[in-house]
Image (cartoon, rainbow, N blue to C red; front, side, top):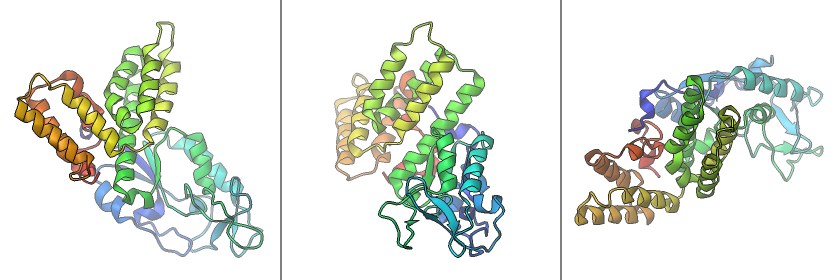
Amino acid sequence: MHDPATHHKPRIAISACLTGHSVRYNGGHKASDLCRTQLEEHFEWTPVCPEVAIGLGVPRDPIRLVGNPDHPEVVGTRNPGMDLTGPLRTYGEQMANELDDICGYIFMQKSPSCGLERVKVYQDNGHPAFHSGRGAYAQAFCERRPDLPVEEEGRLHDPVLRENFISRVYAYADWQRVLAEGLNRGALVNFHSRYKYLLMANNPQAYRTLGRMLGTLSKDDDPLVVGPQYFSELMQALRRCASRGTHSNVLQHLSGYFKDALTPSDKSELQELIGQYQQGVVPLVVPLTLLKHHLRNHPDPYLQQQAYLQPHPESLGLRNAV
């Protein structure tokens, strides 16, 4: 069965304060229990603090976003003449190029340099603007790396968002392996084949669109051109979180592979668990465990390679909570 745990630990960039580095403006840190206890054994961290990297000290004058929420400037709170917008954006672009071995990035929320969304932007009168903005470093970084899975630490406490982000990290790592081994037509089709049901769960519309994109490949189409375009659309599509409804639809599709192999009582047990999952009575791991049990007894090569059945190591327990 497709098992991400058999490969190297994916490398994830992370705001350095989240790993316990004392780099915040007040000399402290924001060590994330979630990252350090639940995630650390599965990932290699690359801690980054853009504010320290551009030469600011610890402790330091706090900074904030001011002006137009779409293109805010970053200035010192006490010294508004200190404009750090350029240095932070330049460093974001530099790191987007340098961090070429990462498969994801966890940012510190609400930070004027690292926040991905809902960062306060102040107006000339000192009051926050109606609309919020993005941290200057994070914005510049993400503009250069639109396919990379990114998330804020605060949002990772939501089990659905956490499961979605980590599924995307492993999909990104899987694609990097395909590229390293040499992207050809067969490798592209096989990759899509592995991700079909994960895609169907997260984004049924993109499942159809991307299926058509690869289904109409002609022998003249260059996989080195089509591949990156396909992967870009896949990563955007996977950002949508699966719902109990879309998961249940995929579980029904998977159960269809066993329609001739199972006894009537096995079939009704499986249907009952899928129904209980759809109603919110049991988590996703319950019907999935039974499906995997039947798959071991009735092996199917197509199903065994599906990333959906094991998008991340089982020991992370991410599907016990969704």
